[in-house]
Image (tube, rainbow, N blue to C red; front, side, top):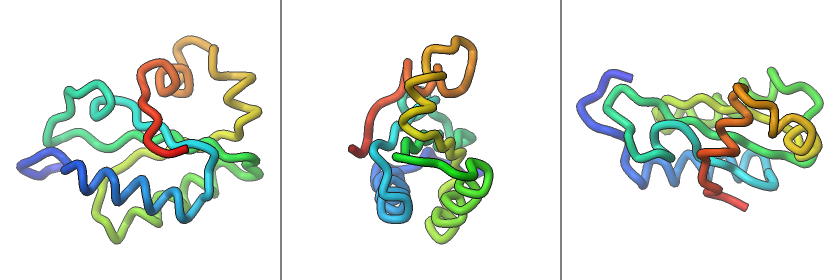
Length: 108
């Protein structure tokens, strides 16, 4: 991201709302630099969407990223089912592990 400022709290809230309305997830978790409080102007938004079921993870991640395009919010969106989070969330070194460890629930 090449802007002069970090994303505003309003931009983050708008992104979370768009994902919540588009995915109807159990939870959305903010993780990465924005969750840690060390985001810079070059940071993107890292969001974990936990849904009841995920049939095609790649397609769903693309669909959800498209929901954010009108907001002009650079974001990485991970999508997992609640069952997958239960099974794989403790696997150290994975993005899911770090999202759960350092993340903050922003929806659900």
